[in-house]
Length: 295
Figure (cartoon, rainbow, N blue to C red):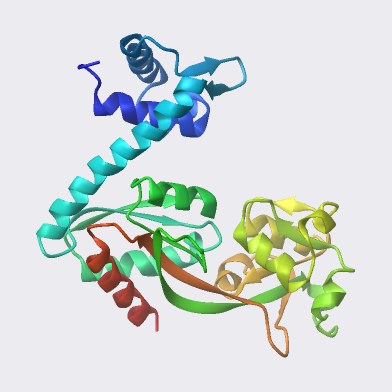
């Protein structure tokens, strides 16, 4: 037990999150055999199995579940020691780990990276793109310093700072350009293409149309806005995308863009970080700088 290492704990946490040794090895930037050896050594030292292994997946044992909770706290505390050191330097320096949701990343990241590079020249950015639930988990675990997501999150452990609001637009085939823009209730009667479950943008689109998730099961789901727009261009249906995605996603698709009248659907994009983070004051200043630069 005296020989447990942080490397072993981080490898264990990666396998617990991914449920797969290969994906965990990729996440840790090591070979699968090297990771497997470290996990086996960890289990030998503990005298207990941490995972149930099968050909299809890896699951935590009962002991592994309890162990994972303690490991999460330990690694978060270790990461916060690094935050404390950076905060003591009086400014932003070293590595800054920022998460971002997929419906924002391709369109906003170039501007955010440029702003941060100009404002904090000593910072090394590490970007993580994934869905909101995972970003929240990784923020809480201390594996991310901040994340750009749709607000509000209603997470008591996280501080939220709004950056900007943006509208949703309707994407439909080019041949429909001159047709009236349908109202929200009319969209329920159309073939509305949506992102797959797990994307907060899907939930926002359903809310605008006053549809529940079960009512959308017969609709075609996709994993990216690009796929949705290309399907619309092929005449499959219609979709909603955020305004920031229009220049990128519609330039090579045979589609038209329509804006809703009245009160259009929209979302608020902001930066979130742990309230307990030692970097909280610096992250607030960073968020203010990004919002000012984005205008």
